[in-house]
Length: 143
Image (tube, rainbow, N blue to C red; front, side):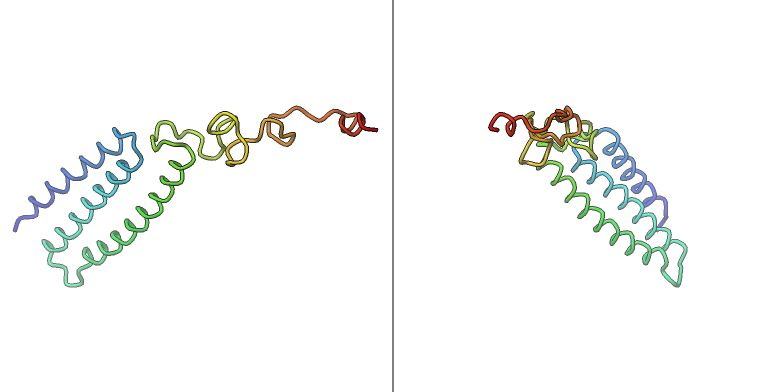
């Protein structure tokens, strides 16, 4: 068998995967496109291993390592996407600009117990005004 046929198929798979990574906005579809690209590389490894007649079958062994890494990547990536979807309500990659910090005021604008943003009256919030220098106002009013 000629090596051209699997190589052309691998180029087509890689091109479809690259288009999916660059054009899609849904994080799950981006992960699926990355998997297509990895499978195109695996197809090339096995095809060239068979074409070269390698006695050690290094291409097939490397393909097994690539499949293992891809399985771990998709498991971890899917867990991250599900966590982001649970907190943000969307898996749109264009809207995921703040991964380290939550949006100001929380997901629903109020913040608080869901862990996304500080409660409106929280004095320890990053943008909160400093406490008055005179002490606690409630303690002074009751005294």
